[in-house]
Image (cartoon, rainbow, N blue to C red; front, side):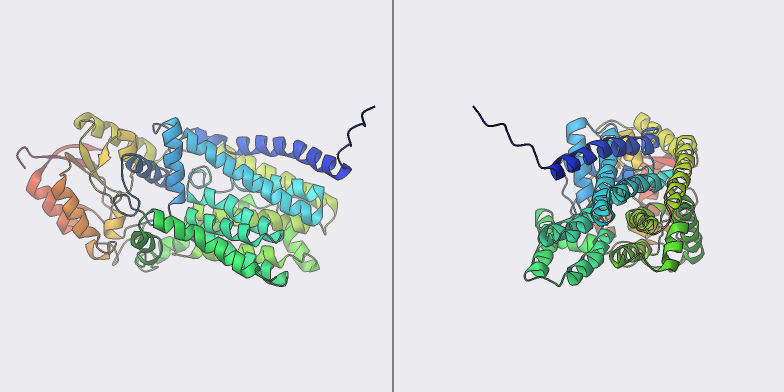
Length: 482
């Protein structure tokens, strides 16, 4: 007789059953909390910028040469890949990738928490993260932008470090950096875990190699000098606090208050556990602190920057509930769920603000140009190019790169001389080689208006005439023969 097959070990069965129950729960919750993201074609200019970049890359553009931004390459490549498979006429494909990014983050946090505190803690961490991750202005929480794709990378870095897989932890840190520079902040808690585990022989070397090699490869695949300039050395003026102090302070306080409101169910247990001094999670506090520094770097405090705080907040709250009565856990989850429902309602009912303007402007651009015409949109809404399906006349997709205007900055540090170094000679050469058929002045009274930018004013005076207006944006067509 044949021997009966051996049954799998009980630990394997229990582990499989645990994830078989938890994965569908977190998947459904990830989809529900991201429902508002599919409710409109575009949430903010960052999505528009990435969409235009992806089309330019697909058309033969080269990152950090003819396609430029102050960000690393990972997210533009994700957009390009999604557009190649599913088409560039909709952001649905990248919104699905964003849902998967949040789900992966929740699963990694659940695994971290379960390893430290048990099954219930694993479920708690995954659920709390997904609930609190929508706790920002919907245009920040629901958009498929850089910070969303930082999150699974930072969570993976902590997961690998917790298991002493130092090479993989370094690779995850590198991926976080390549999604956005501030993602590299997770290296601090990872390095602390390395130190806590006694810095095993070769561990530091593997961590360093895992961190450096992917970044080096990304630089070599693109343009090394351009990569360093656009991601590290070329943003000094952009990171300045001068010229927008009050505006930035108000934004920082407002976005902090919004996230605090979303975390109303999590803050009390964390504070109570701190008073009891029994949390014992210094790596999580380092993670939160490093992420807070990352939010502050550059002195802009945009709402989507705060997403980087949410994984550490969820894990700290989970840790806190382990030393408190069980009813505290129930109250934390219930309160956070109620807050999440309010933010989802906000996302579904939020007014469209500038989206309607940009859609009307894109329609006007489409009506006045042919599909192969180049267009220059002088403003802060690069999504106009994407909605109009027109090719930008320049690699500089916003006036911000040519004037240092960003996020409401006004005053002494906006103008041609504050542009990205070397941008204006390149910009003039581009317009001379391929003069745009239509120039759209979408400044609408902002500090970068053409009457404050002499080079642009001369261009319009010499070769263009006003042909229309859309919601205060002025359209200029090239004069025949120019």
